[in-house]
Length: 420
Image 1: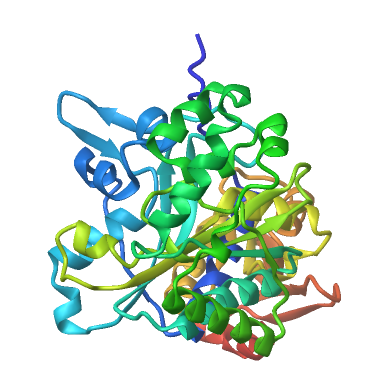
Image 2: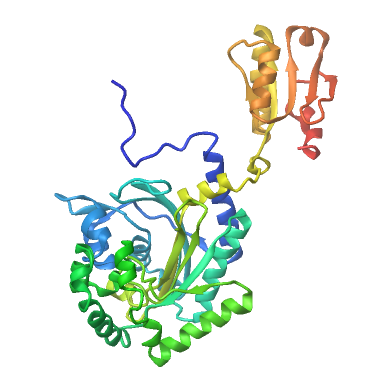
């Protein structure tokens, strides 16, 4: 019986993995431009970390986490909580009061698998801990916009503010009063959420519920003076940078820790409109997890599966971004294969990427392999060439071929450095 991958878990095969590498390399380059530093955190954490950070009443904690109940340990469903736990535990804020960090890796949620949404999925996670400036909110949003531009992906930006503990209670009361007038007509999930987290009712995806909530009060009308000024500076900053956005009063995000600025980058190129990056402020979360009181933070995550799908659909030729093989050595005959193997060892030590065949294939078959490997040059060594003391070097771009003295040493190939 064949053993197959688990439902919602996907192999990333050669031919596709190169797109992932391009995405990661492009992201790292942009993160470096913005002065971010990489951090790597475990995929397994204490369950209490996510219960405290994400919130007991969220769908993630209630329904979607992969938890080892006997150990009270959970595979991370998102990256922010783990990253903040590491910052606090390792005293990074003592070393530098503002931390600019990113992490890349797999997350795990037990959701219904669909296009661009898997049970093991991957995120680029970007966080800044220690600054409350609204200009930083604008900068982070601009980072995401630049990365999508570099990848040639079309997205739209939606923006909201969730206020703060000072102004949100009054809005919560107004929203709850609006919900209670329609509660009997809402879905069972929204009826339950109205008791535990009324803001989540705004995020319901049921069309009938969205229609019922269309005229719900907007939190933007209930912001305190400080939150209102913060939100205005963020919007003015985006306008100054020429980054278009749309205000969306229904965008509350699915995690309890958000406050003030929240945002999503959306695409309609995957069928139904879908978020490919989302995040916002979480100014009370560091303290909630045991960190220094009053430490602000902001961050966002980008779904890598969805971005790769968009890269595949964009029509761009990403092959140009994939590093070609420098040299394919076609060894013909027993002696030719042995000399090819030794020469490959020397060339690899000198930094060349080299392909070889050990199956005794014909020259024609090996040339096909070299093409498939996108080799820039092919060097042919056969028994005849060894007898003559000359090998054949073929440029696979212009198909020119020339004989060269058969000095089977790596330094004899250094003239290719300027051509690669």
